[in-house]
Image 1 (cartoon, helix red, strand yellow):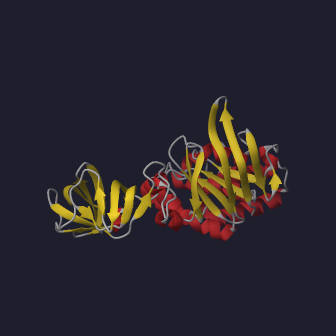
Image 2: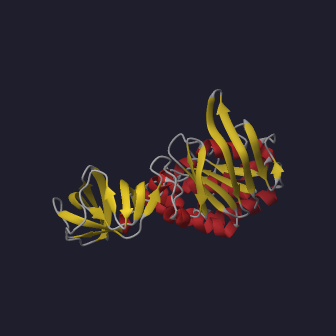
Image 3: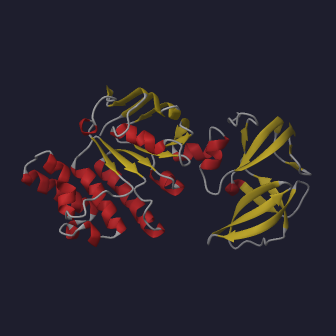
Length: 346
């Protein structure tokens, strides 16, 4: 295990700044997940930790030791890639023990380490197979086993589950959670998958255009997003955002007749998660028209038009509402954001 610290970390390619003053810390044994849109810098940050990319300015510390100038092999980190990166001509046992053989460790030590990792990952019966004889999930477990036998201070996962189908991704999420507990390891994990982030992370770091938007627990980011970017990026379906004008005890939605029973003053952006939007028969407030009912099994998503705005509500199935119905909307939990900056308001 180890702690990680980023201090005003910057990464540029020529005139293009990819990471812009990243400040964050990862605690001993913590599972940190990096999320953000494509091109936001999350994989670049992971590669900076691994030493595969040179840091332009700022500091990276592992256990309070500055490692900017250390070669990858001197940082005691292990990276698991999206592509698995297994040697096709080597057996599972040979792939998993490769780093220890390069380090000229005794064969008995290598065998013990590989056997222990294989038992942890359920690979005991596959040790003599070649990667081409394995499923995608099995290959991913071999790649993780190869990292485990090195006993690194930090594990780095770069979208390790993105090549797997939905059912296997669910299974591997459970495996990763179990593995983290068993190893008591420090892990930094990059993903595009929100469910993956929310289920695996102790904390989530949200990046956008190379800038940290917020870093906190999944619950904190969901319940108290720092700005409209985090509000719409975390949670599926996204938070509804409506431009409103507060008039004390009610709010008027721009371009919509009728007031919402939400207190506020002045112009701001009102945020409502689909799970926090009750759907009722039309009343005194604004009236929306349902356009699509999307059944999700135990729940349904109601896609509706509220004047010029699209809005989504999540309700329990079976739902009485159908496309074409006119309905009232009653926000139960709301978030307020500055209309210009997007920052969260008290």
